[in-house]
Image (tube, rainbow, N blue to C red):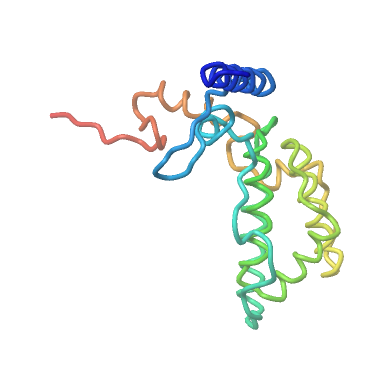
Length: 210
């Protein structure tokens, strides 16, 4: 007959064997449970998530998509003047657009074009521009692609208005900003070398004297 001591010893042995088998099947983890919040820290828990860096995503500008915001513009003179000024702005922008734009710069240009199609002060003109953007989405891969894309869109408007088609090979002559294809950094450097001009704006400085 097994004594009480022997029974206790066997129970202890069985418990130790059970613990050992559990340890082998489930290796120890560095994770622990916060008793106050219930959050799991370490080993893929909350603590590890703090160090995860999300992949870089292009900036999405809110409001760039949607319908026309402005109402109809009835003043024909104001409409014509507004059109000339806007084409001047957009063509000059594309001619100064980077040769090799970054993803962020490409997104910025596309968003600007779509925002213009919503906020253009002439509502009926904006609706026409949005229809053109549906057929011819902005091309943003380079300065050449952006400028030729805009010239093509401009000619679509000229065709609808029974105006002559513009020669896209002479964009620089028609919309010359005085800077040509020079990078912005070069223009600033030349202004900085001339001590008679302001390094930032290029404006003439007032000379002092007796």
